[in-house]
Image (cartoon, rainbow, N blue to C red; front, top):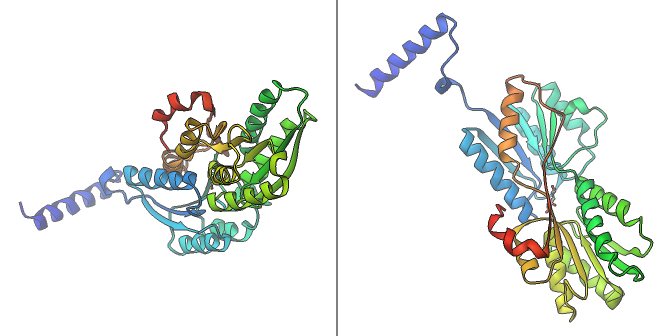
Length: 323
Ligand code: GZL
């Protein structure tokens, strides 16, 4: 049978189905179109998050319009406006910072395009501007980092521990909340003191640069580094070694994400613990987008389940890591 004849027959079959009000077969439904605005490519975590989303879209037959904002809010706003103009079915994004989204999200609402937040939250006056937020509990991640340090400090109860902190991107939900959770826990022990705190913008390069400044200012007074992500910790580890000190021994190193680079640093004895923050949000995002378009109820908040990985378990756990 020629392709033309097959096409005519298929069209006739669909027309017949349509006339009797039958629902079109799955193969005839147009693919779901999702516009996704990604923060950037600033860290191992972000790269793994992008891979998860792109692979899940491909596997799910979703048409993904993907925009990398290079860590600039104005680029995310432009991308969201472009998705509105293209009349995508769902807009999803990981907001680089918490504030400044009300106007563009109102435009999406006026265009009747549902918005799904992934990874990071937004601060908006009207929470109906987004359908749901899929991501980690960053305050809890900060608490877990603090609890690990409390337990370690209990072994030397009389020692004062001077902590330096590498914060994430200024104004971002993970930076704000990881700081909050960590301080909430270490505040219960007056011997634990944050003596320097500055943003490393979640990158290895900036993490190294700021740690060099911390070491220049405080030197051997530093007992602990708390980094809001593994990439900044890995950059800082280079600075610590270049200063002739032993990361993981002379300076205890605590970080968050749980990327492969962190496990390699723990196995090398240079990092003491990483608190997991899973970037593997792709499959959940595709399912939620389908449910939203189908008009199914979805929870306002979907929190990812995560663990804590001290150096002692790194070698055993490493082969199981997916990012
Ligand atoms: C956390 C994510 C953060 C990671 C960083 O969910 O937003 O951004 O911790 C990444 O590695 O850059």
